[in-house]
Amino acid sequence: MRGRHRQLTPAEVTALHRQKDAATVAAIKYATEATELQQQLDEAGITISGLLEDLRVEREEGSRLKAALANATSVSVACGTRDIWPDEEPTHPHGLDVTTLRAQFAGTSPSHTPGL
Image (tube, rainbow, N blue to C red; front, side, top):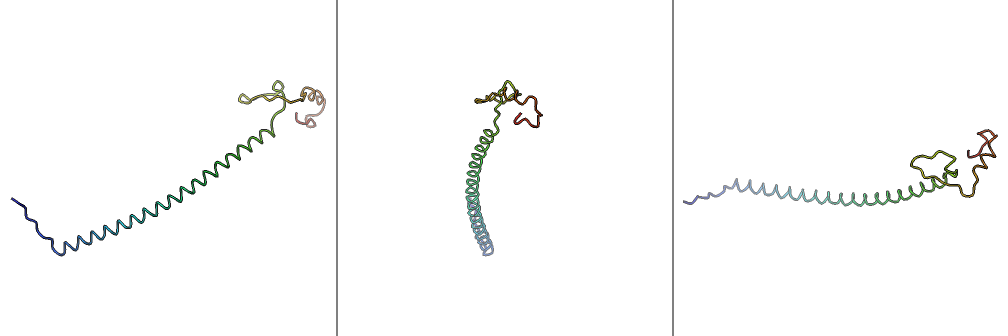
């Protein structure tokens, strides 16, 4: 036995058209929002790329300045005559006789002894 299909009433057809129209409007709204969000995401990606490049440049500059500071404040006292931190590599004087300097300033006040 076959089931009978009844025809929709005009009110039901109108209601279905309204639902279809509402679904179409919602789909257009969501598509527009998705496009706007994609544009914002693209702009954020560009901003992040720029910030990452700035960070890379600043890190390079920081490393350069750190090396310059280390060179400017390097210790030129022989490792046998000063305390050395455990993770520090000893430096050696280049042509300076530190013992002679210590002997030279042995009788003076510590506030008048340069670099000791």
